[in-house]
Image 1 (cartoon, one colour):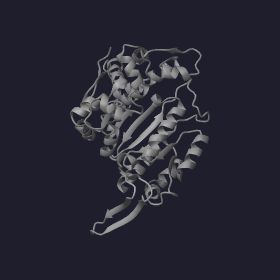
Image 2 (tube, one colour; image 1 turned 180 degrees about the vertical axis):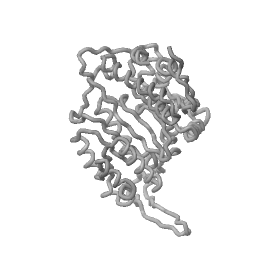
Image 3 (spheres, helix red, strand yellow; image 1 turned 30 degrees about the vertical axis):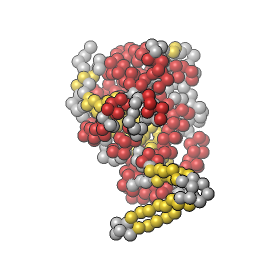
Image 4 (tube, one colour; image 1 turned 30 degrees about the horizontal axis):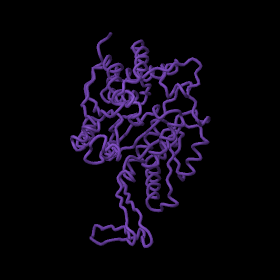
Amino acid sequence: MADKIKMTTPLVEMDGDEMTRILWQWIKDILITPYVDLKTEYYDLGLEYREKTQDKVTFDSAEATKKYGVAVKCATITPNQARMGEYNLTQMWKSPNGTIRAILDGTVFRTPILVKGVTPYIPTWTKPITIARHAYGDVYKNTEMKVAKGSKAELLVTNPDGTQTKETIYDFKDSDGIIQGLHNKSDSIRGFARACLNYGLDLKQDVWFATKDTISKKYDHTFKDIFQEVYDTEYKEKYEANGIEYFYTLIDDAVARVIRSNGGYIWACKNYDGDVMSDMVSTAYGSLAMMTSVLVSPDGIYEYEAAHGTVQRHYYKYLKGEETSTNSVATIFAWSGALRKRGELDNISELVDYANKLEKATIQTIEDGVMTGDLYLISKLENKKKVNSKEFLEAINERLSAMM
Protein backbone atom coordinates (compact mmCIF):
# COMPACT_ATOMS: atom_id res chain seq x y z
CA MET A 1 0.00 0.00 0.00
CA ALA A 2 1.13 3.55 -0.70
CA ASP A 3 2.21 5.81 2.14
CA LYS A 4 -0.57 7.18 4.32
CA ILE A 5 -1.96 10.61 3.44
CA LYS A 6 -0.36 13.24 5.66
CA MET A 7 -2.34 15.95 7.45
CA THR A 8 -0.84 19.31 8.40
CA THR A 9 -3.57 20.68 10.69
CA PRO A 10 -5.56 18.54 13.13
CA LEU A 11 -9.30 18.02 13.07
CA VAL A 12 -11.17 18.55 16.32
CA GLU A 13 -12.56 15.11 17.17
CA MET A 14 -15.57 14.95 19.50
CA ASP A 15 -16.32 11.42 20.66
CA GLY A 16 -19.82 10.46 21.76
CA ASP A 17 -22.07 7.88 23.37
CA GLU A 18 -23.50 4.38 23.15
CA MET A 19 -23.61 2.51 19.81
CA THR A 20 -22.37 5.46 17.79
CA ARG A 21 -19.27 5.57 20.02
CA ILE A 22 -18.56 1.93 19.12
CA LEU A 23 -19.10 2.64 15.40
CA TRP A 24 -16.87 5.73 15.70
CA GLN A 25 -13.86 3.63 16.66
CA TRP A 26 -14.59 0.95 14.07
CA ILE A 27 -14.87 3.56 11.30
CA LYS A 28 -11.47 4.99 12.27
CA ASP A 29 -9.85 1.55 12.52
CA ILE A 30 -11.32 0.05 9.33
CA LEU A 31 -11.85 2.98 6.95
CA ILE A 32 -9.62 5.91 7.99
CA THR A 33 -6.33 5.11 9.74
CA PRO A 34 -5.22 2.50 7.14
CA TYR A 35 -5.18 5.33 4.57
CA VAL A 36 -4.73 8.59 6.51
CA ASP A 37 -2.08 9.56 9.06
CA LEU A 38 -4.92 10.95 11.16
CA LYS A 39 -4.23 14.03 13.27
CA THR A 40 -6.96 15.07 15.69
CA GLU A 41 -7.34 17.06 18.87
CA TYR A 42 -9.53 14.68 20.86
CA TYR A 43 -12.41 15.62 23.18
CA ASP A 44 -14.54 13.01 24.93
CA LEU A 45 -18.16 14.23 24.90
CA GLY A 46 -19.42 10.93 26.27
CA LEU A 47 -21.85 11.55 29.13
CA GLU A 48 -19.54 10.14 31.82
CA TYR A 49 -16.76 12.57 30.95
CA ARG A 50 -19.14 15.49 30.56
CA GLU A 51 -20.29 14.72 34.12
CA LYS A 52 -16.69 14.39 35.34
CA THR A 53 -15.74 17.80 33.89
CA GLN A 54 -19.09 19.41 34.77
CA ASP A 55 -19.58 19.85 31.00
CA LYS A 56 -16.41 21.96 30.62
CA VAL A 57 -15.23 19.52 27.93
CA THR A 58 -18.11 20.58 25.66
CA PHE A 59 -17.13 24.25 25.88
CA ASP A 60 -13.45 23.34 25.36
CA SER A 61 -14.28 21.36 22.22
CA ALA A 62 -16.21 24.31 20.76
CA GLU A 63 -13.31 26.70 21.45
CA ALA A 64 -10.90 24.23 19.81
CA THR A 65 -13.21 24.15 16.76
CA LYS A 66 -12.91 27.95 16.53
CA LYS A 67 -9.12 27.55 16.68
CA TYR A 68 -8.70 24.80 14.06
CA GLY A 69 -11.69 25.56 11.82
CA VAL A 70 -12.94 22.00 11.25
CA ALA A 71 -14.48 19.48 13.66
CA VAL A 72 -16.13 16.07 13.43
CA LYS A 73 -18.62 15.03 16.10
CA CYS A 74 -20.11 11.71 17.17
CA ALA A 75 -23.73 11.49 18.33
CA THR A 76 -24.18 12.33 22.04
CA ILE A 77 -26.82 11.86 24.72
CA THR A 78 -28.92 14.80 25.87
CA PRO A 79 -29.95 13.47 29.29
CA ASN A 80 -33.54 13.24 30.49
CA GLN A 81 -34.75 12.16 33.94
CA ALA A 82 -34.13 8.47 33.20
CA ARG A 83 -30.53 9.17 32.20
CA MET A 84 -29.93 11.07 35.44
CA GLY A 85 -30.21 7.84 37.39
CA GLU A 86 -28.57 5.62 34.77
CA TYR A 87 -25.41 7.75 34.65
CA ASN A 88 -25.48 9.13 38.24
CA LEU A 89 -25.55 12.70 36.97
CA THR A 90 -25.38 15.73 39.25
CA GLN A 91 -27.54 17.68 36.81
CA MET A 92 -29.39 17.27 33.51
CA TRP A 93 -26.61 18.54 31.24
CA LYS A 94 -27.75 20.52 28.20
CA SER A 95 -27.47 19.25 24.64
CA PRO A 96 -23.80 19.38 23.55
CA ASN A 97 -25.05 20.24 20.05
CA GLY A 98 -26.99 23.21 21.43
CA THR A 99 -23.95 24.44 23.39
CA ILE A 100 -21.60 24.11 20.42
CA ARG A 101 -24.09 25.76 18.04
CA ALA A 102 -24.53 28.70 20.41
CA ILE A 103 -20.75 29.21 20.71
CA LEU A 104 -20.13 28.93 16.95
CA ASP A 105 -23.38 30.79 16.07
CA GLY A 106 -23.74 28.73 12.93
CA THR A 107 -26.33 27.31 10.59
CA VAL A 108 -26.92 23.56 10.36
CA PHE A 109 -27.32 22.20 6.81
CA ARG A 110 -28.79 18.70 6.55
CA THR A 111 -29.04 16.88 3.24
CA PRO A 112 -30.23 13.31 2.54
CA ILE A 113 -27.87 10.82 0.89
CA LEU A 114 -29.69 9.26 -2.06
CA VAL A 115 -28.96 5.66 -3.13
CA LYS A 116 -30.47 3.43 -5.82
CA GLY A 117 -33.01 1.02 -4.41
CA VAL A 118 -34.29 3.31 -1.64
CA THR A 119 -37.30 5.22 -2.96
CA PRO A 120 -38.47 8.25 -0.96
CA TYR A 121 -41.89 7.91 0.67
CA ILE A 122 -42.79 11.07 -1.29
CA PRO A 123 -42.45 9.71 -4.83
CA THR A 124 -42.06 13.15 -6.43
CA TRP A 125 -38.83 13.77 -4.43
CA THR A 126 -36.23 12.99 -7.07
CA LYS A 127 -33.60 15.47 -5.79
CA PRO A 128 -32.36 16.11 -2.24
CA ILE A 129 -33.93 18.77 -0.05
CA THR A 130 -31.39 20.52 2.19
CA ILE A 131 -32.75 21.74 5.51
CA ALA A 132 -30.91 24.84 6.77
CA ARG A 133 -31.54 25.16 10.50
CA HIS A 134 -30.76 28.33 12.41
CA ALA A 135 -28.62 27.07 15.27
CA TYR A 136 -29.14 29.82 17.81
CA GLY A 137 -31.76 30.78 20.36
CA ASP A 138 -35.48 30.04 20.43
CA VAL A 139 -36.54 27.17 22.69
CA TYR A 140 -32.94 25.87 22.93
CA LYS A 141 -31.89 28.92 24.92
CA ASN A 142 -35.22 29.55 26.61
CA THR A 143 -36.15 30.51 30.15
CA GLU A 144 -39.28 28.80 31.45
CA MET A 145 -41.26 28.77 34.68
CA LYS A 146 -44.22 27.06 36.24
CA VAL A 147 -46.74 29.62 37.42
CA ALA A 148 -49.11 29.32 40.39
CA LYS A 149 -52.80 30.16 40.13
CA GLY A 150 -53.37 33.83 40.97
CA SER A 151 -50.00 34.92 39.52
CA LYS A 152 -49.54 37.55 36.85
CA ALA A 153 -46.75 36.99 34.31
CA GLU A 154 -45.16 40.03 32.70
CA LEU A 155 -42.42 40.65 30.13
CA LEU A 156 -40.03 43.32 31.41
CA VAL A 157 -37.25 44.98 29.38
CA THR A 158 -34.81 47.44 30.95
CA ASN A 159 -33.79 49.87 28.19
CA PRO A 160 -30.24 51.31 27.76
CA ASP A 161 -31.32 54.58 29.41
CA GLY A 162 -32.65 52.74 32.48
CA THR A 163 -36.33 53.12 31.62
CA GLN A 164 -38.44 49.99 31.52
CA THR A 165 -40.94 48.58 29.04
CA LYS A 166 -43.47 46.10 30.38
CA GLU A 167 -46.15 43.93 28.78
CA THR A 168 -48.50 41.44 30.38
CA ILE A 169 -48.00 37.89 29.16
CA TYR A 170 -51.01 36.44 31.00
CA ASP A 171 -52.95 36.90 34.23
CA PHE A 172 -53.32 33.42 35.73
CA LYS A 173 -56.43 34.27 37.78
CA ASP A 174 -58.28 31.01 37.34
CA SER A 175 -55.56 28.39 36.84
CA ASP A 176 -51.92 27.61 37.33
CA GLY A 177 -49.82 27.31 34.14
CA ILE A 178 -46.48 27.69 32.44
CA ILE A 179 -44.57 30.49 30.69
CA GLN A 180 -41.59 30.51 28.38
CA GLY A 181 -39.26 33.29 27.34
CA LEU A 182 -37.49 33.08 23.98
CA HIS A 183 -34.89 35.38 22.47
CA ASN A 184 -32.83 35.83 19.35
CA LYS A 185 -30.25 38.33 18.11
CA SER A 186 -30.44 40.38 14.93
CA ASP A 187 -26.74 39.69 14.27
CA SER A 188 -27.33 35.95 14.48
CA ILE A 189 -30.37 36.10 12.21
CA ARG A 190 -28.34 38.16 9.72
CA GLY A 191 -25.53 35.58 9.84
CA PHE A 192 -28.12 32.82 9.31
CA ALA A 193 -29.52 34.61 6.25
CA ARG A 194 -26.03 35.06 4.75
CA ALA A 195 -25.08 31.44 5.42
CA CYS A 196 -28.24 30.18 3.67
CA LEU A 197 -27.93 32.54 0.72
CA ASN A 198 -24.22 31.71 0.30
CA TYR A 199 -25.05 28.00 0.36
CA GLY A 200 -27.68 28.61 -2.32
CA LEU A 201 -25.04 30.25 -4.52
CA ASP A 202 -22.59 27.38 -3.87
CA LEU A 203 -25.15 24.72 -4.84
CA LYS A 204 -26.89 26.89 -7.49
CA GLN A 205 -30.19 26.13 -5.78
CA ASP A 206 -33.24 28.17 -4.77
CA VAL A 207 -33.56 29.15 -1.11
CA TRP A 208 -36.91 29.06 0.66
CA PHE A 209 -37.48 30.67 4.05
CA ALA A 210 -40.62 30.26 6.12
CA THR A 211 -41.92 31.42 9.52
CA LYS A 212 -45.34 32.36 10.94
CA ASP A 213 -45.12 36.14 10.77
CA THR A 214 -48.90 36.53 10.53
CA ILE A 215 -49.16 35.29 14.14
CA SER A 216 -45.78 36.33 15.51
CA LYS A 217 -45.84 39.90 14.27
CA LYS A 218 -42.57 40.97 15.95
CA TYR A 219 -40.45 37.85 16.61
CA ASP A 220 -41.05 35.90 13.39
CA HIS A 221 -41.62 39.07 11.37
CA THR A 222 -38.11 40.27 12.31
CA PHE A 223 -36.66 37.06 10.80
CA LYS A 224 -38.63 37.70 7.61
CA ASP A 225 -37.54 41.37 7.41
CA ILE A 226 -33.83 40.65 8.01
CA PHE A 227 -33.78 37.86 5.40
CA GLN A 228 -35.40 40.14 2.84
CA GLU A 229 -33.04 43.04 3.64
CA VAL A 230 -29.92 40.83 3.34
CA TYR A 231 -31.19 39.31 0.09
CA ASP A 232 -32.13 42.65 -1.49
CA THR A 233 -28.91 44.45 -0.55
CA GLU A 234 -26.31 41.67 -0.94
CA TYR A 235 -27.61 38.76 -3.03
CA LYS A 236 -30.41 39.77 -5.42
CA GLU A 237 -28.16 40.51 -8.40
CA LYS A 238 -26.05 37.37 -7.84
CA TYR A 239 -29.16 35.19 -7.63
CA GLU A 240 -30.68 36.67 -10.77
CA ALA A 241 -27.36 36.21 -12.61
CA ASN A 242 -27.33 32.51 -11.61
CA GLY A 243 -30.98 31.92 -12.50
CA ILE A 244 -31.95 30.98 -8.94
CA GLU A 245 -34.38 32.63 -6.53
CA TYR A 246 -35.02 33.37 -2.88
CA PHE A 247 -38.57 33.51 -1.67
CA TYR A 248 -40.47 33.73 1.60
CA THR A 249 -43.68 31.99 2.51
CA LEU A 250 -45.58 31.01 5.66
CA ILE A 251 -44.37 27.80 7.34
CA ASP A 252 -47.67 25.95 6.74
CA ASP A 253 -47.64 26.93 3.06
CA ALA A 254 -43.99 25.82 2.85
CA VAL A 255 -44.89 22.36 4.19
CA ALA A 256 -47.60 21.98 1.53
CA ARG A 257 -45.21 23.16 -1.21
CA VAL A 258 -42.44 20.82 -0.04
CA ILE A 259 -44.69 17.75 -0.23
CA ARG A 260 -45.72 18.63 -3.82
CA SER A 261 -42.18 19.49 -4.98
CA ASN A 262 -39.41 17.54 -6.72
CA GLY A 263 -36.76 18.67 -4.22
CA GLY A 264 -33.47 20.26 -5.23
CA TYR A 265 -33.58 23.39 -3.05
CA ILE A 266 -32.55 24.69 0.38
CA TRP A 267 -35.33 25.12 2.94
CA ALA A 268 -34.26 27.59 5.64
CA CYS A 269 -35.98 27.13 9.00
CA LYS A 270 -35.83 28.67 12.44
CA ASN A 271 -34.20 26.53 15.12
CA TYR A 272 -37.19 24.45 16.31
CA ASP A 273 -38.76 24.20 12.85
CA GLY A 274 -35.46 22.93 11.45
CA ASP A 275 -35.09 20.39 14.25
CA VAL A 276 -38.49 18.89 13.43
CA MET A 277 -38.47 19.26 9.65
CA SER A 278 -35.00 17.74 9.20
CA ASP A 279 -36.24 14.52 10.84
CA MET A 280 -39.38 14.56 8.71
CA VAL A 281 -37.41 15.09 5.50
CA SER A 282 -34.75 12.50 6.34
CA THR A 283 -37.33 9.85 7.26
CA ALA A 284 -39.32 10.56 4.11
CA TYR A 285 -36.17 10.03 2.03
CA GLY A 286 -35.67 6.68 3.75
CA SER A 287 -33.62 6.87 6.93
CA LEU A 288 -32.32 9.36 9.48
CA ALA A 289 -29.03 7.45 9.25
CA MET A 290 -28.77 8.61 5.60
CA MET A 291 -28.55 12.33 6.37
CA THR A 292 -25.46 14.53 6.27
CA SER A 293 -25.22 17.37 8.77
CA VAL A 294 -22.76 20.26 8.89
CA LEU A 295 -22.74 23.33 11.13
CA VAL A 296 -21.29 26.35 9.30
CA SER A 297 -20.48 29.52 11.24
CA PRO A 298 -20.66 33.00 9.64
CA ASP A 299 -16.85 33.21 9.73
CA GLY A 300 -16.29 29.89 7.96
CA ILE A 301 -15.90 27.30 10.74
CA TYR A 302 -17.25 23.81 10.03
CA GLU A 303 -18.49 21.08 12.36
CA TYR A 304 -19.63 17.80 10.77
CA GLU A 305 -21.83 15.31 12.61
CA ALA A 306 -24.36 12.52 12.19
CA ALA A 307 -27.92 13.85 12.22
CA HIS A 308 -29.25 10.97 14.36
CA GLY A 309 -29.01 9.86 17.98
CA THR A 310 -26.82 7.37 19.82
CA VAL A 311 -28.79 4.21 18.79
CA GLN A 312 -29.44 3.20 22.41
CA ARG A 313 -31.40 0.02 21.61
CA HIS A 314 -28.53 -1.42 19.53
CA TYR A 315 -26.02 -0.47 22.21
CA TYR A 316 -27.84 -2.52 24.84
CA LYS A 317 -27.85 -5.48 22.42
CA TYR A 318 -24.11 -4.95 21.80
CA LEU A 319 -23.43 -4.94 25.57
CA LYS A 320 -25.18 -8.34 25.84
CA GLY A 321 -22.93 -9.70 23.08
CA GLU A 322 -25.80 -9.81 20.58
CA GLU A 323 -25.28 -8.97 16.91
CA THR A 324 -26.31 -5.52 15.67
CA SER A 325 -26.90 -4.22 12.16
CA THR A 326 -26.47 -0.48 12.71
CA ASN A 327 -26.38 1.98 9.82
CA SER A 328 -23.14 3.98 10.07
CA VAL A 329 -23.49 5.97 6.81
CA ALA A 330 -24.22 9.37 8.41
CA THR A 331 -21.23 8.96 10.75
CA ILE A 332 -18.98 7.93 7.85
CA PHE A 333 -20.12 11.01 5.91
CA ALA A 334 -19.39 13.20 8.94
CA TRP A 335 -15.78 11.96 8.81
CA SER A 336 -15.54 12.27 5.02
CA GLY A 337 -17.02 15.78 5.10
CA ALA A 338 -14.59 16.94 7.78
CA LEU A 339 -11.57 15.34 6.09
CA ARG A 340 -12.56 16.83 2.72
CA LYS A 341 -12.94 20.31 4.21
CA ARG A 342 -9.60 19.94 6.05
CA GLY A 343 -8.00 18.93 2.74
CA GLU A 344 -9.58 21.89 0.92
CA LEU A 345 -8.47 24.40 3.55
CA ASP A 346 -4.94 22.96 3.75
CA ASN A 347 -4.60 22.36 -0.03
CA ILE A 348 -4.10 18.59 0.39
CA SER A 349 -5.70 17.21 -2.78
CA GLU A 350 -4.98 13.59 -1.74
CA LEU A 351 -7.12 14.06 1.38
CA VAL A 352 -10.00 15.52 -0.67
CA ASP A 353 -9.69 12.62 -3.13
CA TYR A 354 -9.72 10.07 -0.29
CA ALA A 355 -12.87 11.63 1.23
CA ASN A 356 -14.64 11.51 -2.14
CA LYS A 357 -13.66 7.84 -2.60
CA LEU A 358 -14.83 6.95 0.90
CA GLU A 359 -18.30 8.34 0.11
CA LYS A 360 -18.35 6.68 -3.30
CA ALA A 361 -17.36 3.31 -1.79
CA THR A 362 -20.09 3.64 0.86
CA ILE A 363 -22.83 4.33 -1.69
CA GLN A 364 -21.50 1.63 -4.05
CA THR A 365 -21.66 -0.94 -1.24
CA ILE A 366 -25.36 -0.25 -0.66
CA GLU A 367 -26.13 -0.16 -4.38
CA ASP A 368 -24.32 -3.50 -4.74
CA GLY A 369 -26.93 -4.87 -2.32
CA VAL A 370 -24.84 -5.03 0.87
CA MET A 371 -26.56 -3.06 3.62
CA THR A 372 -27.61 -2.80 7.26
CA GLY A 373 -31.01 -3.89 8.57
CA ASP A 374 -32.79 -0.54 8.31
CA LEU A 375 -31.98 -0.20 4.61
CA TYR A 376 -32.62 -3.90 3.95
CA LEU A 377 -36.24 -3.40 5.04
CA ILE A 378 -36.87 -0.52 2.61
CA SER A 379 -34.52 -1.26 -0.31
CA LYS A 380 -36.22 -2.23 -3.56
CA LEU A 381 -33.09 -3.98 -4.89
CA GLU A 382 -33.76 -7.58 -5.94
CA ASN A 383 -30.44 -9.01 -4.78
CA LYS A 384 -29.70 -7.63 -1.34
CA LYS A 385 -27.95 -8.94 1.72
CA LYS A 386 -28.30 -7.83 5.32
CA VAL A 387 -24.97 -7.64 7.17
CA ASN A 388 -24.00 -6.73 10.71
CA SER A 389 -22.50 -3.42 11.78
CA LYS A 390 -18.85 -4.39 11.36
CA GLU A 391 -19.38 -6.46 8.19
CA PHE A 392 -20.90 -3.38 6.54
CA LEU A 393 -17.76 -1.35 7.25
CA GLU A 394 -15.56 -4.19 6.01
CA ALA A 395 -17.60 -4.40 2.78
CA ILE A 396 -17.08 -0.65 2.26
CA ASN A 397 -13.36 -1.10 2.85
CA GLU A 398 -13.14 -3.79 0.14
CA ARG A 399 -14.39 -1.25 -2.38
CA LEU A 400 -12.39 1.64 -0.92
CA SER A 401 -9.09 -0.28 -0.98
CA ALA A 402 -9.68 -1.15 -4.65
CA MET A 403 -10.20 2.57 -5.43
CA MET A 404 -7.07 3.62 -3.53
